[in-house]
Amino acid sequence: MGNLIKKLFAGNAEGTDSRIADYALIGDCETAALVSKSGSIDWLCWPDFCSPAWFAALLGDQSNGRWLLAPKAKARVQRKYQDHTLILETTFMTRKGKVLVTDFMPIRGKHSDIVRMVQGIEGTVEMAMELSLRSDYGHLIPWIQHLSDGSYSATAGPGTAYLRTPAKIGLKDGNMVAEFDVKQGETVRFALTYASSIEDIPKRIDLNRALEETQRYWTEWSSRGTYRGKWADAVLRSQMTLKAVTYRPTGGIVAAPTTSLPERIGGDLNWDYRYCWLRDATFTLLALLNGGHEDEAKEWKKWLVRVVGGEASQVQILYGLSGERLAPESDLGWLCGYQNSRPVRIGNAASAQLQLDIFGEISDALYQARRAGIPTDARDLQVQYDLVEYVRTVWRKPDSGIWEERGKPQHFVYSKVMTWVALDRAIQNVERHHPEKASELPLEEWKKTRQEIHDQICRKGFDRKLNSFVVHYGSKELDASLLLLPLVGFLPGDDPRILGTIRAIEKRLTTGHLMKRNRPSKPSAKQGAFIACSFWLVQALVRANRRKDAENLFEKLLGLLNDVGLLSEEYDLEREELIGNFPQALSHIALVNAAFALFPTDAHQHRDH
Image (cartoon, rainbow, N blue to C red; front, side):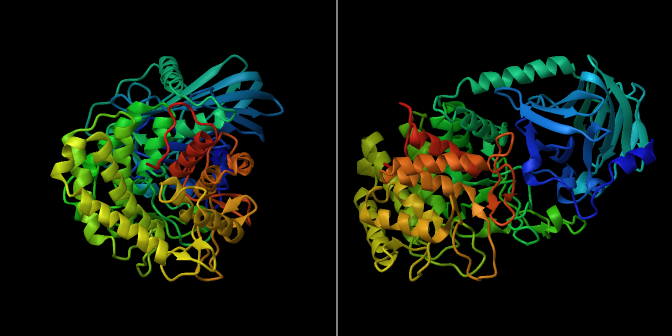
């Protein structure tokens, strides 16, 4: 049986054959797994998003860990999520029959579980299963034991995974394998449970009950959504994806559950996105609030205040799930990378950069939360005021910009705009919501600095010949982040300078309906279209009173969604496929906010003041 399994599922020595768009997401709101159309779970970090992966075939091959469950014969594949849930249903159709594989992760109790159910729909289908557990990002083969209760355990260092199934399991080359037939009306179940290696063996879960509870959790959560426009399915799936990458114990939201999926195939722009970025703070908050998910918005705001509360000069651009500050970057040399895109990195050295935009994000998020009625306490106000005072001392400095440039710092226009936002939102917060504090604060000094920043940006950051704002002072180049100027209220959306900037960006940065972040400094340096930027253009067009253009663009952008409604970070214009870390929270946040910009509800909030 082992040789047959090996022959059937021989992988590509250069990595998985699946494309990024071939994956679907399942998760338990503390970690997540990626399931391919072929029935293979190729990525899973345990016990949480930032932990080492136990399945890393996504960045290597099957020897680096995966869980394959599929027909032995060639099959046609259809898949979808159960309505309003994160429960994946994959239908395999062979010449001899049809089976439905249901994959999900129950919302975590004490332990994390993956459940896979194979249900016979028509005829008889010969199935095969190969479970290759490899801890430490596909590096270590665990110690496998057959336990007295019939289950199997796989232990490596701090963790143990337990496999429970009625299928007959064999062992081969450190893998657990099985072959079995599934007839119409039959169901074969598998459960894989993660626990600490020093605790007692976890109890078996009732799989049918787990399915019902998971269905109930997601359908109840989905029912709170407030969007009722014609793109409701895409908006709901994006909101659900955002919920799935939220770390429930703390409220932190990771940018993506993956690391090192490349911005360019074969290139080295491969970064670890399993962190919480402050640059996304207000966009995230508004996506949650506009969607009717106030509880998640409250938790995100609490997380934000916890991690930045302290010395303003020590605020970082990104943090771990619980506010961890250290994110040392290193390479995993034993992994070949997605489609041979090396290096595979863990950690993110950008955490040490100065990015001035984050201070505006924090101040704006606190203001928008207060504006939405989320309770504000003295600590929230003190954090905002301390940050504003710090911004007054550093706003003139060059920084690394929103895209985390690893070159010479520059006076990026968007960064300067966000220092203006930091002051503006603090002033608005005091004058509108806390006038009793006005006499205790240097409001007039804040207003002077706010005006000084605004004047400098309009003088040094706008090129009259281009009739556009530029990426940084003294440059003749553009950047998609400039589309955010009207969205944050720096200038009205119909201001001639904004209209000129939009037209210039459309002309120089867009290909068809897709937009690049900027033009690379080297002509040979290729980059994909950054998906969130195109959704920012939708919102900017709405503000510019070009609603029909905005709606047409939004419709085209929905075509980027994969078959189960997920988006990555970028789109490769030459290869015509999704690239970058997946699914990308910012892409889905931008989709949600663009949809609400086009069809606002009564509760819809803009970023501007």
